[in-house]
Amino acid sequence: MRATYGRQALQRLAEEPGPDPVITDFMMPVLDGAGFLQAMRSTDGHREVPCIVISSMPESKSARASTGMQLSSKPFQLTEVIQMVAAILGRSDGDSA
Amino acid sequence: LLLVGLVARTAGTRCHHTAHFGTAGTPRSELYVPVGGISAVAETLILLHYVELRSKLFQLISLFKVREGAFDPANRQFVITDNGIVVGEPSESVEAILSGMPRWAARTDALPSSEDGKGQTPEGTRSCGMNNSLTVLIVEDEFAIADLLEMALTDEGCRVV
Image (cartoon, rainbow over all chains, first blue to last red; front, side, top):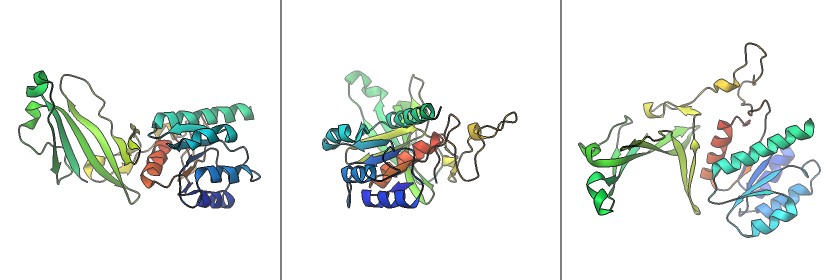
């Protein structure tokens, strides 16, 4: 599942079953990462979806505490993002056990 | 497929603590150095090349030669963004790049076991490692970064719809 800005991402969430993690940029047109995360968190069924934000914006760090997201700063290391996804997967396995 | 060889720091300049950096392009897809004799003096050769997959162009980088040392020859995708260069992990999901006809490599670790059938996946999808599957939503307005993320996650076996 891919989207190029927040509004489109919300449409994708409405059309298809929820993703396991969301990886999102912070500064985007139409609806930025902060707005997208806020809207997603207020939607039934998507409140608990884990989020990874990849951004160079300092505002993304302040938003981290309020949304419980994980943050990778640009320029980012792919291994770091993959490890975050793997950690989410491990946590999901633990939750379901 | 375009190959560009970069020649960095020749042996003759090593003792002067300087480096020469040159580039040369080749119109053919074969792996060769387009400047005769340059390999004798070049200490490092780097390949930059493009590959077309799924009707998109990806830019890859790999080491071709490092004098007096072992090196990792893996192809890595790299992207130039507003925030710098992002170099990806070695991509094992694409093969036969230099043939001019690249293709997605089969994931042997996703094949069903003859004993228990674990790891079997529906046709057209890929399962995530650790006997699980993840669907990831990537929200990114820079297509190159989104492509890089998608390729890396697919490499890890995450399900791509």
